[in-house]
Length: 205
Image (cartoon, rainbow, N blue to C red; front, side):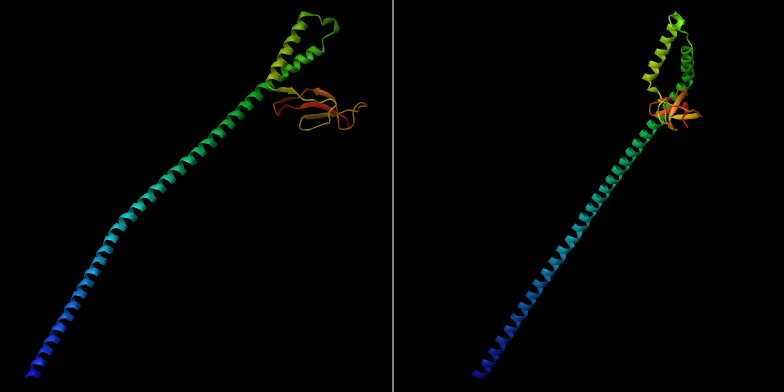
């Protein structure tokens, strides 16, 4: 009888131990499931936040690109306008230069006539009031031309230069060497840095 009681007790203890082991295993499994569920929830939460952050960053990037594009467009338009302004100013200056040269070219024959008239004055006519008046007008005319940057081209005694001189004849000379201008037949003029009229000259052969 004692042996039977002992065996029965041993079986009961073993059953109780098995139940405790199963219960602990179930608790561990539940805890693991809870942890996994929490991780999934956190990941899901992170997945919800990241799209918003990425969308905000993408929006900022697009706005920055748009701003840079507009700034670049404004810079290009300013550069184009500056080029247009410079081109317009240059065209206006060229038109003014062309108009000024055209007017000055028409004045030069008047200057030539003054010089021819003054060169043919006889010595006894030097004190004539009309002669003095002509000299004063001629002097005033040349002064105004000089203010406009119109100057005579040097010719006699200078080496012939086709950029400034127009040779219409050759002439022997004991005074000047070959290739030099010996006589000026019509005076030439410069307007600023350009030739207004070439000098008509005789050149030593």
